[in-house]
Length: 414
Image (cartoon, rainbow, N blue to C red; front, side, top):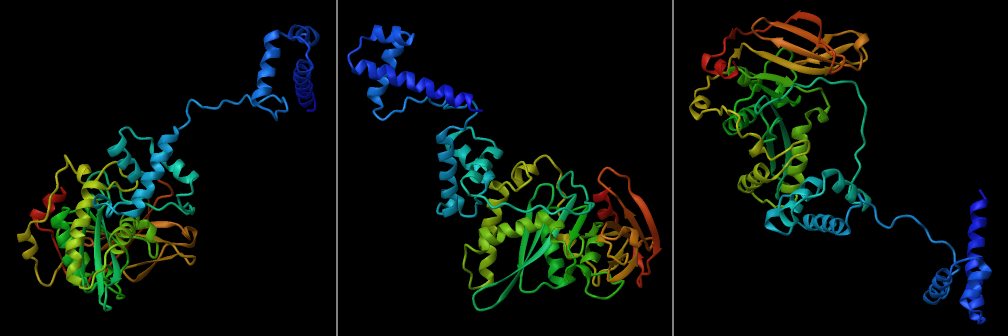
């Protein structure tokens, strides 16, 4: 370990001696002969000492000053400038825009042409302390429905806000998981009637889905009464739509709509001041237009409007929405739920406990209620690659007759 520093010291002393002899008047050729080196080498260190008066004649670092894959400095400056530009939200086109790598990449392409990759922008932001790390929590596998095309799965949630004067405003958001398109409506309450009104609006805008996904909000699930089929579920079954309830108290399962809720709260609600409930829809329409045509959501490859191109969209006709029976019946269909088994081996479905078994504690099961057969089937899948296992088939009583789905609605899901 000490050999290399010793050689460096001898080399420095040799250069220092060459310069010292030259200052004393010794000819350069004599110095070269005495030190057994070339004349050009002597001149090199004489000139070097003139340019670096305080040099110690140490050997400099041989590390390269440039790397072939090093990001140019102007790219880093541009990325950081765009970040600051987006944070200010001063321009009209960035009124609702985010400040993350995807938005920066899009703005970079508009201004400068070819862009650095998403990971490169993320790395630049991270090195300059412009990001917030998110913790990753490990948990058991949770089954999810597949969304391979628009309107396969639509998920709905409610976000509550207050306006000046204390008036409450309940905003319903429905997100199409494949395209990330959104339908939104605001109401004074979050009753089941308001939820049904929003769903009709969403199906007119986005289209009729195969599966409607909800959390366990009482407006969707029907309250605290056992074996009760809510008005929202009845409305979905009437149009031949399957219903899926997410795990209880696990908002991250509903991440597409929760992500949009965060974007809506940050980019829309916090940047506008409302004193009347009727002022919200006008600004919200502008926000939704920007979202559909210009915003690329996380885990998405393009804007919602472009992702829907080329796919058939079956939107709900207005005449169908006006012809709803009152009261809504229970129609033949399927109601699903994903539940985590508690330590005692039970799950709750439609406010009724069902025993699964302690061996499945803390794991997730899939429950399916077939209203036509009045049977509840419980399934388990260990991982995404594993096959489904049928655990139980139970009789499920319903206090009302079950009607078949009308042919015009059944044809939409054929």
